Amino acid sequence: MSQVRHLVQLQLLDTQLDQAKKRLAEIEVALNDHSAVRQAAVRSEKAAKALLEARLALKRAEQNVEVQQEKIDRNQKALYGGTKKSPKELEDLQMEAGALRRYLSVLEDRQLDAMLAFEEAEAASTTADQRLSEVKEKVAAENVDLGAEQRALLAQAADLEARREKIVSPIAPDMLAKYGQLRRTRMGVAVSEVKDGGCSVCGANLSAAQAQAARSPSKIVYCEVCGRILYA
Image (cartoon, rainbow, N blue to C red; front, side, top):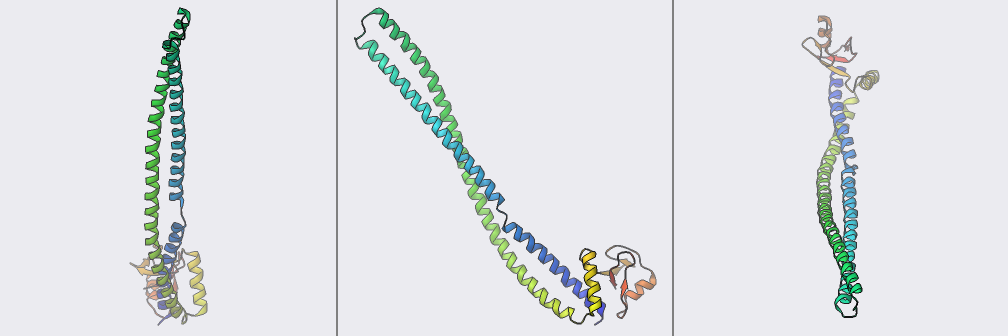
């Protein structure tokens, strides 16, 4: 088999290897990317903190209502308990009772607001926790699929490497060096097929003599524009 034909086969194998290695690198990044879980966890923690604050606020509001109700109870006992006899004292107690009840109404409104805020925070925390669980399950399932794909690609890459070693052995060292140089400088593609009278990679038109030479198994022809090895 001619040197060019060996180089064509080598290019095909190397292209497959490049694709496998690129995908393996993408899988490695994906397997080590924990950002989605971290973001969901942060949202869950914030929601839990907000829920705790809302619970404490509701507790304080409930306690304030209880304290105010106790004040009202003491006021009522003093007003109707018979210990206060003078009209002035009774009038003062009645005025105090009205003020206590008005403030109780304010505190009860605050308690209602705190209760609504707590219920909203509780729902948000539940949603955030559910979302965190969903993200974890999704990532775990994706990682299982990625792991299977990774193992298959590693096996494929090992097979391609073994086949590559066999193809490389009959290629002359100087040609192999040239091939490697072209691969490094021409985006991984060192060998280009002649199609419709031109280089299939860069699109440059070839002279009739060049196109004919590219068909010869004993000649090495390079594209005058991109420098790649041509074959037909």
